[in-house]
Image 1 (cartoon, rainbow, N blue to C red):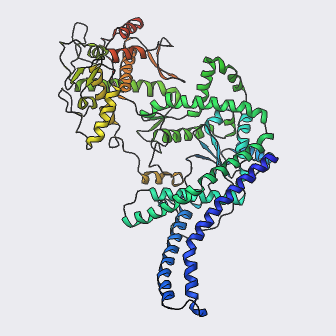
Image 2: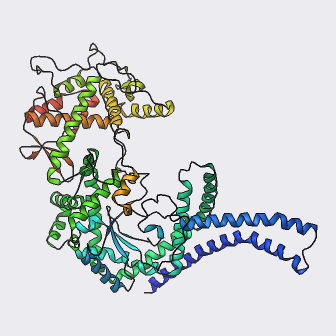
Image 3: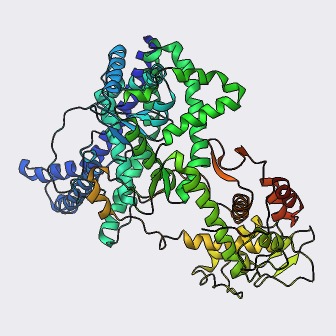
Length: 625
């Protein structure tokens, strides 16, 4: 108890330092007005008279008024600015009475106030979030400004405990006892949060942070831009002054909460922390390997949290270090505390797609949910065939002739052999690829012309041109240099094909091709769900794919299409590795090294041997999307 009291005392001391900074700023703003009042009151007492004092009064009074107006404006922005909140899925007490009951019982055991509400986040973390600001209630449908309630009279609100935000993967993977042990130190933080000094310091810091965000927003009016620039300068100055003290205050609050939670399920919490790390690993793998391909196809898996359980169960089956974790599945999962786990999982899955990929806020024709049972056909098969079709469109644009010979299809249908022959043909006497100006390097690699490498130059083949050149030559030159470095270890034909694929995919994914829903569309659906989405995705899962990666993906997709159409293979879903090719119900051997050998060295021998071993016929036509 002594350690907890010491940590809370340290947090309160830092909070008082933050409040003193606020008081000093207020004193500086009032100082010119105080001096002006003294100068104006002097003649009434028979003092401070004379031409000099009169000049001082006339000079200082307008300055004091301007300073007061500026201080009032800064204070108004700080008080009215809408603090940032984490996008979450709200959980009402009617939707999860058992969960609310467990949290309240936990708060009673810790002797702290219970959280005011519970929300879920599609991430492996939990925290308390203060949403007592008036702007955090459901905003009017017509209110979209960064300053909430401008021009309205403030209304008083009773003190409200913070909201408990729980990571949704925890509810599905953890058992009830493990979830309670993990949430104990988080719920214990409501005690220090209720202290008036700490609460006031937090409100002040959040207000400054929100004011900086308001000042940094785009403004077209020069007057408002100049005024907000001054507000932003003052807010940043104050924020720099109290940032260190605010950080130490939060550390003290966390230490006090952790110490208070020591007496609640301490032994179980050690085991539960292992589950936190395992859940994070499974969640990250599921998002990057399984969900991301579906999001890129315009589909969002509607049961991501249930997928975490499947992924971690598969991990425990493969990894001997995780063998003991599967035995926990017989206990009651924490998602049983929800009345409708499926509906909550669907809402969290949609929010995850919005945060990590930047998808629309609501389902639509081009953004529809997909069940796990439909994933192989709706996502894997469709993705492979779309990539294969794009690959052949680019080959047509490059002027690559269809396969000829006794084994070629009479209709000129697309085949895998066409791709293999094009990437393998590196003889000096072969005709040059249209638009491909490649010169050999001394290290055995090739250097491609930057115009061709970016795919932005005019296409001279049979297909359509790739589009007009960029409007900014400097940025285009930098992008061309980066792409040339990425493709430096490939053959000339691979580099040209990869660059054209990259340009084609960029054109397809441009905002003009896939317009996002407008704010007015969102407000008609649910005004309470609005939040700032100008910087989506907030947490990109992976950097943009390079041209080399795109070529490898498209070539792999073409091989998989040939396997499905000529050898009876089927698309499948691996919970840890994502889309996979199944032959006779088993995963096919690793294809990546053979594909890379063809791209980097122009050597198709390993890939052709792999195809022959599995009975895949590259000369047969394949069905494209």
